[in-house]
Length: 89
Image (cartoon, rainbow, N blue to C red):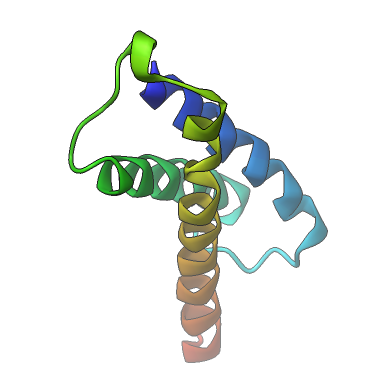
């Protein structure tokens, strides 16, 4: 159940990329994948390499994914910026 919460929070954070210039590696799909991957990885790391079940999932479980989604989006953005500067665009 926690995995579902992390993915949904990553999806929610991804919606805010509409306000950023499209310099993501892979475009908006790259930003989507970065947000979901970052949210899930960060959630698993915070919970000690485990995925809490339904009885251990709370409202704050979803909030754990916010920093991960932001880091995933930032990583894809930096990757796209570097590629754009290199001229491989």
